[in-house]
Length: 108
Length: 113
Image (cartoon, rainbow over all chains, first blue to last red; front, side, top):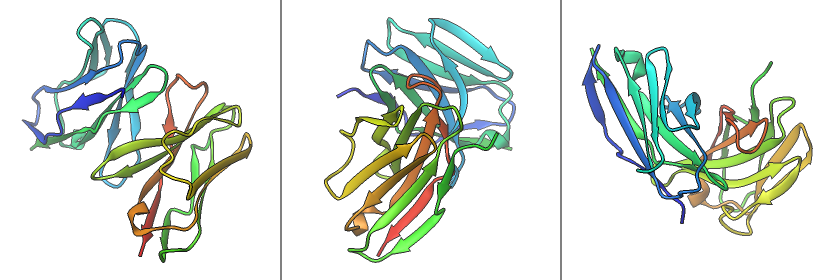
């Protein structure tokens, strides 16, 4: 059973702080990794994807991948209340597998 | 370009009735996915199609569920007969290729009484 694990949270951070979201995966054959944001009552929307070890930055978001440790993370700098949502990590090996999501709350 | 389109957005039905959910993927996308999301089980992949052909339906819960993709611009997910435990949000997503980024539709909120 291929799994993606995330801390369900909630993760609470003050406005302006860095939010760090973590994800581990069991399938060593996983090739690509995705972070989706899902607001309550809405559909998941892509934040970032990453294929290679290391960091990938896009605005306030940085994805980090460590294939040796089977670990993916998402950092959100200068967190805003509008970042409050559930963040889903997904890994693609033979198929897409989504984690259960981490609920982030950014406090004004 | 319009995103993934799903209909209906909300469906309330009684146990035992047939339910049909519809999806129009993004034009040019070759892969289509059906997911179910509940608080208890999170986002579960039910089935996906590649070039209109079902590739993996191992996530389909039981024979009451069936999915079709008669052409590149339309797919259906049917539940017959429906049961209260089928109540969930059903998402359709599409991607250009199977291993690439999936774009989700708005979802269909299904309530089976």
